[in-house]
Image (cartoon, rainbow, N blue to C red; front, side, top):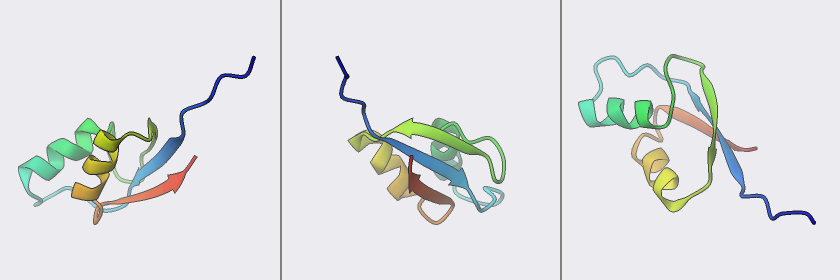
Length: 64
């Protein structure tokens, strides 16, 4: 009875949000990232992919 696991992405903040556009700061917060080198695991959904694409210059993404 193995459920199909939704794929996850590991997102790490690698650049500071200081001096960046407010909507980009909000997007980083929305992803759950709080500080430099903080890593979170998020579901791989189209909405999350869109958020990652918006701030791709600030984050590093890996398959989890």
